[in-house]
Amino acid sequence: MSHLPSSSVRDHMKWAGLLGCEAVLSSMALMQASSMAAPPKKMIAPLGHGPPQREGPDRAPQSHMILPSGMSCPPLLIRKEGEFQAPRLLDEKEMRANEDMQQKKKNRKSVTPCKVREQEGRGGKGTGGDENGPSSKVQKNFICDHCYGAFRSGYHLKRHILIHTGEKPYACAVCDMRFIQRYHLERHSLIHTGVKPYACTMCDMRFIQRYQLERHSLTHTGVKPYACTMCDKRFFQRYHLARHSLTHMGVKPYACTMCDMKFFQRYHLARHSLTHTGVKPYACTMCDKRFFQRYHLARHSLTHMGVKPFACTMCDMRFVQRYHLARHSLTHTGVKPYACTMCDKRFFQRYHLARHSLTHMGVKPFACTMCDMRFVQRYHLARHSLTHTGVKPYACSMCDMRFIQRNHLERHSLTHTGEKPFACDMCDMRFIQRYHLERHKRVHSGEKPYQCERCQQNFSRTDRLLRHRRLCQGRSVAKVENQPCCEPRPYPQEPPPAPPTWSPLHPPPGRLAV
Image 1 (cartoon, rainbow, N blue to C red):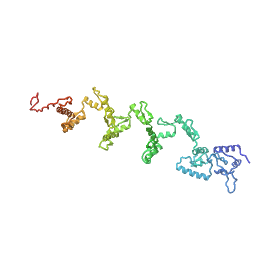
Image 2: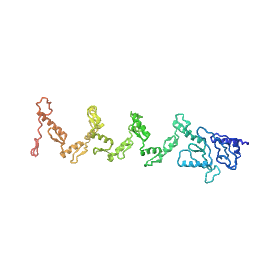
Image 3: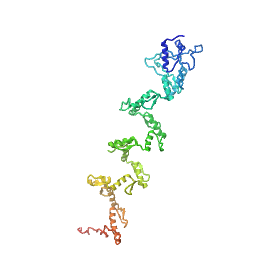
């Protein structure tokens, strides 16, 4: 038996170590490796077989895989570990079948790492390649027996097998998270340290992962690569597209355990759950108010700062909320989208419609605690309560008059300015109040809507009706003056004489005839 040089043995041992498996190098294999002369094949003795047989007339010479350095590798006996079969090298026929399988998986866009790729040789390296082809090929000969994935080294195969076993050998020292790869652990550790190595070149944002930076960059470019196939909407992230697709299918996968509500997003469910618990996690730092949602807190904070970011393009009004601006815009367009189903009235706001509907139903939900009065609106109740307290919060700036309601103050201010905004369309008379104009129009129409209950006499104005009632009361009291239960009468029993009628020919006393 001949002996190989020590350098050849070291080379074989080095190659066995690179394969990541335990090899038994027999002396016969060493002698065969040194005396090999025929072109080698990609073949290795299968497990459980003896040493290679001698060449015969009907059998091709047994050989080994060509190494990148030009030397040959002896046959290896690979020991099984655990319940998974150990990696093995393929012969030429199995290599071709495996390449076909990997190409099919590549066409199906498989996310598994089982793709057989050819790495083109770098310039100036390797020999034997022509000008139009790659100078060298790196084959992935390590096959996973579970998913038939191909890998270029035993290390990559062992790391891949952890996916099938579920083992995660790398544990975080700060929390309970575990990972399959060390790289994933290192990336996760940045969350605890607060380091964000990936910075955006167009703004000051920084990110822990490169993927997050690439996704953020789309917001600057405006590119939305994920398009919905059922509508024209596009999205920056695939997750947003998947979430949007549920709206077309009507699927609401997140159900509340305390009521029958269902939601498209988990976040909506978590936010809804706060309404059952009553927890308001977002507190204002400038007052005692708390809110269910962060957005409500941010919107409320604008009231403290006095910021009104939403401006009307048709007037100078500004608003804290976008909704208020949209509602205000209807006053310029004149559109009243909310119609009453019981009458012809229409309203700008839904709240106004709901409040108006109470007038049809006769419901007055707001009751005064100091008397029996009830009101349709809360504002009317608050305004009525001032009559009990005697508070007049609206003061005139030009005199000492004070008023319970704002509209009373505005109406009073016209007496100082002399403005009469309400004009009669049948004569030149103008009035400060609309009520005075409506009362004046009865002079032209001859309408007398107010009637005395005792004498059935009609009047056009309430003040004239009240003055007439005093007279009727005096006549009725005169008929029962002998009754002892009568109270003192504040007015004379006999009505005053009627004013004399006069003409230019019969003037009243003190005037000369014309």
